[in-house]
Length: 273
Image (tube, rainbow, N blue to C red; front, side, top):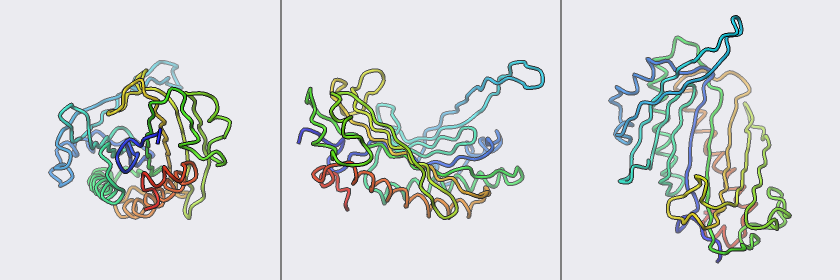
């Protein structure tokens, strides 16, 4: 088969699980994570402090104002320094990501444990600030590669599907197709973004295990669940939302792959199991 999935039995390069709040976390809350003795820290022993600067204009004076936001990254690193698992806390965002995906059940079990553990600790620090949960998200990135100079994309994608226009598959070696829509859910709705890029590894697009001159097809499915009503920053509320919505997003992700990939590639990456 000219196209090969990134791994032997699946194509997932990275998966990320996130919570976005309606207010940035306080410096005290971030510091509490740095000092945390909880079990999730054993999974992510490396620590790096981070910060970002936002440039804003004061609407009353018209003067520029720089706002400094402090955050922290926890990770488990490979010998080359890259992170196999990572927790990023910055501003209003709490995000767990991995580039060591095996299968869904163990990956989500670990990511969910970290998110729920971290959230429980942050709730105790921020319970007086009236913070709400803005969204819960899942991002999955699949990668397929080929050595063909003129790839036949009909060997990877179905040509009569709805998500990727058939004509784009005939536009040559490099192209992209980005689409998005909303799906209603009880208690909210999910923004879906399906971004498919056929590209090389130049310009900062290197992927571990692939030569930069190889054509790679990157399929990113980003799902963001936004509750229709306020979701308080409460440990039980967030745990219930994560355990309810994220597995449904996983099912939706598999459905998208079934819609766009050829049956042969579906079998190769075991998307039907």
